Amino acid sequence: MTNTKPVIMVTGRLGQLGSEIFDIAGNYPQFEFNFSDKDEMDLSSPEQLQAFFDQLKPAYFISCGAYTAVDKAETDKDTALAINATAVANIAALCKQHNTKLIHISTDYVFSGNGTAPYTEDEVTDPVNYYGYSKLLGEKAALENNDETIVIRTSWVYSTYGNNFVKTMIRLMKDRPEIKVVSDQVGSPTYAADLAQAIMDIVTGNDGFVTGIYHFSNEGVISWYDFAVAIRDAKQLNSIVHPIPTTAYPTPAKRPAYSAMNKEKIVNTFHIRLKHWKDSLHTCLIKM
Image (cartoon, rainbow, N blue to C red):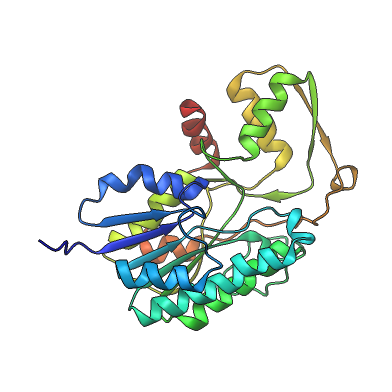
């Protein structure tokens, strides 16, 4: 008997967000989920993408797979562009061909960081690094190539899975009596499990698939230094955390100084309930 359940295709299975969606997929028996990572499907291969679409005919495509090595992207531009822009253009075109609804994940790094109030979805984009530039091209390609597209920009993502700031801080604080963390870069953390739930709330909600760009993160605006101190205190570690300016920690890719985003649109459109970053951090740390 042929399976008639709608298929949800998810790329980036082994990443932070893909892993969190995988964890809650069992809560949605009305769908058949298909997860893939770069070992199963090379996003830069149009032929592999075409074969997956022809075989699965997905109702939804959740695009979590991305090139996320921000510093490396400054020199590895071709790869970043191939995965974050060209592949997304191909995915979106295939979505249009197969009447598939696309949810594509983007980043706060599409903004310059010169703002002083949370960025809204329609504010001017001006990325300060190549990663942000490649992701911005991906956003535009997704929206241009498929009418049924939602782009979700998120920021400072962490999880019990993958590599992230929270895990790095815990490891460093256990190893060192003192650490230094940048205090003049400001934004909002996002627990990947919360974003995974928000995506599924959009898919299964009663508000319809309202296309366009949306912002999602946890509530609250902090610096990386503030985040590090909160992680230390929650884990009851003894390391002293020193605030430093960005100039004292040079990196190949420039970071936006201010990247907090306004989330009113996603809340009002899909009735998503946002959690405060402190509460979500606590939830995540319990699992670690």
